[in-house]
Amino acid sequence: MSKATPVPVKPQPLSPEDERLWAMLAHLSVLLNLLSGVLGPIAAIVIYAVYKPRSRYVAFHALQSFWMQLVLWVGFGLLAGVMWFLGGLLSAVLIGLLCFPLACVFSVAPLVAIVYGIVGAIQAYQGQDFRYFLFADWAEKMLG
Image (cartoon, rainbow, N blue to C red; front, top):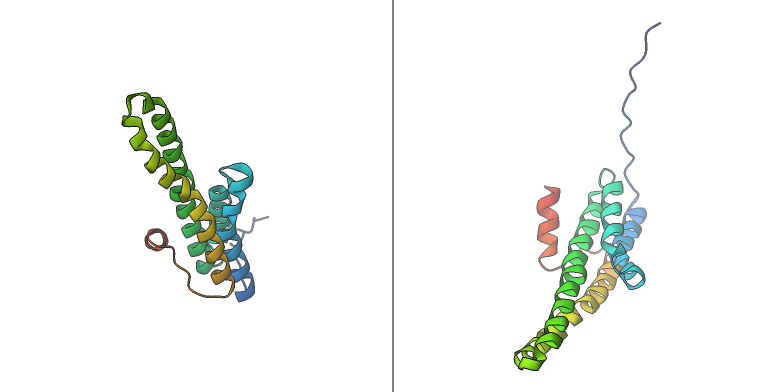
């Protein structure tokens, strides 16, 4: 008795409504950072991995959201923490006082990420071509 080789099943593409929904959820994953600190980028990259074969639209928006959160939330959040620490540590020498303005700027970046993510979610759900500044280009290069 011969064994039949399994035929690979091509994933079904998403409907336009489902594409908009998952693109919106990828952008809204930034809100998970408020609860966990770092789950937002993880959720965005999971949405990217799961839906990449089924929808370029969802993959693009999820990848944009991932990069934006990684840079603005995680990266600038860490920089803000370092600047606040250095500012406090070096304030006795007066040079640390120069760190406080930078710490304030870096502290605002995660809040900008939340607003940016919500705007992206709304526009993606409406079917508009939302593009994060800089991060959209990175996402397009990764998608090929």
